[in-house]
Image (tube, rainbow, N blue to C red; front, side, top):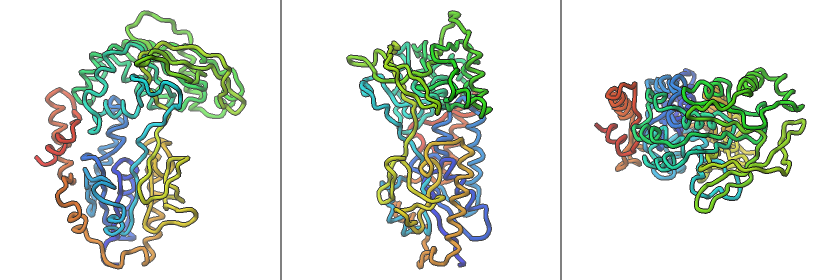
Length: 451
């Protein structure tokens, strides 16, 4: 074929950018790639998921940005699948489609009281403090000002991020790229106690040691082990002996075991072997009821029937992300992923020609940012194997102009538009002595893109 093989990558987070890079870096088959995202700015969870005070991790977006320098790549921002383009249109315009739109919804606890005012999803809170365009600037202003004690349910890195952001003194976040309204709300926060709650023990927590240690390095905050911090059970001893990362995590926890309240302004209380069973309150959250658990030899938790209350004004649920379905694409409702074999989307046992998947919507919300690179390469390898077969190419060559015509009248942010947003954020940050300040509102992003 003399024309390029045209590919649409739906989603510009790490998995989407890594997939585009793998396609554009190989020389066996000529390709052109359109990276399509519903947001005006690229990079997905690197921009709107990684905590703003983790500057080294957020700097990954500079690496991802270089993908947009490849010849043959376009960025179509502010374009949503199902709203601006249908799956049928994509099939018409491209030889292959790679779905990399992630898993952005939260998982529910499924306990009474979860609907009370003051019970919120970590996904919503993270969106707010990172400046996601779909999160209102005042979404958590009252929440922060009106709360003094908060329970964060979950023992993964997102739960640790949320706990750290809530517990940091204002001076410890001033260097970040958070939007100005987030700084203002955090400065006015009344929160002094954060209770981090996990249903199993320290050896079963999924946070990484670096993130865990950071909790003990905060200027005005003390870490206290409230309950369940021991590891004297078969499953924990086995986990510690078999995994160095687990052993390091447990060592950090044990290093905090003898801490007593020294009167510092803020406190983080770690509750292990506590399963949330109810959120109490009349009009809003007043307490979290937890049941003490025990672990079997495999590390699974079961309730003892013994319950107690943790007095809190709010509950933040951080028990995982889940993917959502796209009309016309098979979906596994149990695992909340698109069924696939090594990235080829399948309907039952049959692979769907020209349809692929990568990232969290392929495998579930697991791994670190770098995991998405290997995952995307696997998918692209399959795609290129299929593209070596003449039947994978459209009989009538799809042209970029057809996509542009379908999007006529819509405000589309291209690569130059993103570069203008990037420059505007850097300029705004410079006025406040920072490297960058995130522009939050969609209208402001679109205005910057067209300036």
